[in-house]
Image (cartoon, rainbow, N blue to C red; front, side, top):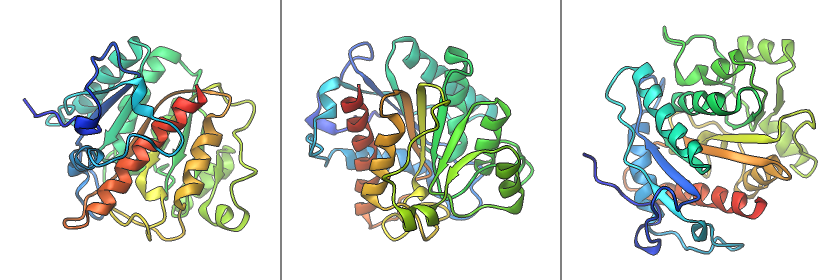
Length: 287
């Protein structure tokens, strides 16, 4: 059995699952990365760095709501077996009316969480995707369950989603977005016009799941990912967009994926952990 590293370490007394508002679910899955590797080490690095975080995030103390840290999800089987394991863990969290916080692992793992949300909510939820890439390829490297296909699988479920910070995608993906009126705000437009005017379309469902591929952040501040791309989101713009995505709505969970530690550069581990904790704080203050 894997050793548990508790999110926030000794600063936060580990909560029992039924007492914690946030359930941190590490998923060290890495099978289809197409450039730089290392996502299987991401969850452990984030958990270790979280032990150095301040409890006060400068606005509130998210840990006051209780944080439960699960054992890492078993990723030793096939992709479908791994996704089912993620689905089961997230389903258990949702059954307790808690907030799943999935730490990847490559972006493929998001689909297991989406399946659990679909089981509970049907189509009555939307997804907000922070990402450098559209991830809308129908197949990549011979599989429909590549990290480059995760949003296409969500599209196939007819779940509405909004893409933020995107700036690297194929013509196939571009055409799909235009043809089906997929909502997006690319990195270049955010850079030129800011984020003040952003809001989700009013027809989107009230329930929101956030999937945050860490390469959505600009590569100058977050190069520790498989495919870093320049022109991405800066720190406070990213947090503002998270807050705007759930304002007046019900956040039903989130993930932070595609983090690949760089040996000797622990500051990136800390940035990833801070992102997870700050999103918890935004959810806390929105509830």
